[in-house]
Length: 570
Image 1 (spheres, rainbow, N blue to C red):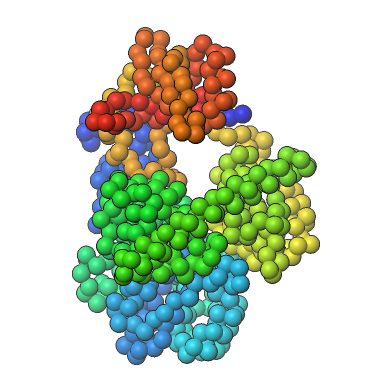
Image 2 (image 1 turned 120 degrees about the vertical axis):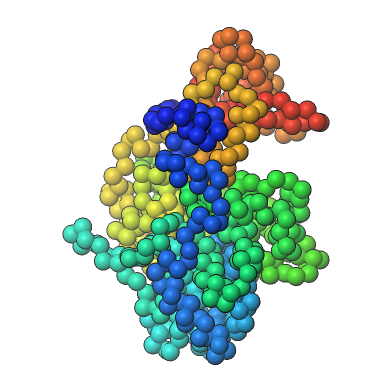
């Protein structure tokens, strides 16, 4: 069951439309995304790289650049320690590419998901000491590694942390004490006292800001700074950051450049996934390119994805890209198997009564826990932790709903966990196997979710007659792109339409093609991609239906027709 709501935010839509030469419907969509005031609307519609804050606003940036410039001059050995997901891999690439351009003696280490685990660990510090490393720079990790970084400092290493995860804290009587690692410099917008306005940068963008600051000091041309925008876009979408303000500008600029990238690895990946010559959108990053980059860190080693990005030989790039696509295809099959096992467990046990789902799949590959958690969250609209049996105890990942801060709830269970970290909407954790039932019990006992929070909500932007749809309106919708978290694809709705001429098409019979006719007799083409048998049964039992939809222009064999993609129906 789901509840439909209409977003009812007020503004003078006609005046906004006149001022910015857009349809009033577009003005309403912008207001629904909480973009208000002429300056903010102008940036939303036509913002450029010149509109984003400079890297010097980041707390810790001055100290970090000063240290790195000295280390580069002194030819000290610098090691970048990244992470095995898309954000960590792209951040590592940005740092190594930028530091090498500046003449640094630098190398990289991306932890292995299985043998190393997440982030900077003692064995990595011992290895750095053994290899004669002078300075460690973390990316997409480090903010929660106070113990490890303290040890590195005791051993004489210089440590710079670049991260974007939540800063750990201790809460006592409602007062929070934040625990920052004892690094020589910490760059993280979430740390107390950081004046940088965007608190939701991904790890790769934090790393890019550091390189931009170093490039500015070395008077390197702007064009070289902009070469990182493609990676910034991939990481921002792939790590599911809010596409608002600066993030949206970065993704928009990166997507513009992606089809023409000079990076041979990205060229090969675009080719092998069938996107060459296409208009690449945030959807393609999230569901085509991004999963391939992530796949190596899940089922093999993320170093393979890093090698792809660093590859200068077209033939080698093609081979690596093909390997990543094959790994991702394998990952898809394993994910489906894990998802089905999780659903069976929930449906056949008392787990189904829990507002917070803690699902233990000991046989599941630990790298797939987060993806499966996301799928289960979509099905049940509840916070979900999927736990797996690793080589060193139980590991897991969680995916949340808007009303539940996963990271803050894990803080309250810290005594049951070996390690944890993350965001309000996603988290990772490890714990002893004997603590699983205790974790499930405590998470559910301390849960403040109400029953209404667990009902999926469909937020309609505009109840709009299908007869209002025009080519000009659909073209103006592209002004709102890129779509994603924090800037969702607009959703329209109309009541009491008749579904006519419906038929199932597609090689796998996974599409319903039909027409919608309103009460005045206006007809528009429509398609539906959901549960086809259920949808066809619904249509056969009703004379009229209500639908939510997104309009588009269907281009086929040189012809253009307006159509709607049906999202929900009742």
